[in-house]
Image (cartoon, rainbow, N blue to C red):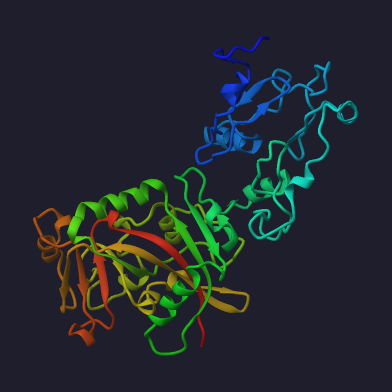
Length: 416
């Protein structure tokens, strides 16, 4: 079959197409979020839709399909003169270049096959180490000198089974592991930071220094960074821009419950339970429909279960206050007691500061612009006793889902 600069011939496989070599050079993998070039089979001149079989499997699975084994149309033995299909190891799902080991050795003897490119990998460093936690081997570098995320296909497969992905390039040296979020949902990443991360020390200090309750302070065990889905982050920035001069961003804590052990068990990925508040907030941010669902709010005797300042999203600059709402995340694990808590970006906008212990829904309707009754404010801040209010510690409430996003998740051990 003659290759032409502008012709494209589609074969029986949905994931491979014959292209001109020049056109193939600039094509990117079809899996969203991957910036690697599509795989080009130099033997057959066929360009596939993805950079490799692993990403092809992910894409096909997302459409509810199953990727078929390699076939003779677009996976021919690379030895000149052989038209047999390549060997496919079904156990490891490795697609080889040749139909058998004998033909691979003949190709090497003829000079048709380059010797091992292991030397291209270089020495293992923190920056080029395999992205599978616990592996110290350098990342695999292919014949085109493209550095992959893992040292081998088996480690790439193992990472996928564990719900892991490679850390973002700018964080690779200061991230222990990165979870890719829940299947079937918009892409997001949750990365476990090492104490070498430039933000780690400042985040830990903010958590510990804002713990005002009496008794021993907790120990910060881990900090995870949440990279929100693109649509969630865009929604937040659009909301903030819309406020213009009234924009007033703050970092505030939020305690909630969870149904799994994510974060506490370092190997556990985010769960898929829609009732797990922690994992759902990581995946989709905050939802007003869940406001007031916590056990502490439901138990407020003085408020008869009502929310103190109306239905909204509640945060605090005091980590120990948010800890009061994190009891539903508490887990006994390996002889210690742990909880988790978010640190969030909160767009407060124009604030209404009150010394009252509570406001009715009707009062909030007339105060807050997001309620649609012409109110001039975007958030309510309840003052603590020291500042002339009636709360033990300050609370911040916003009334638009777009006004807050999770940025970090703290895992901490209770002491005493």
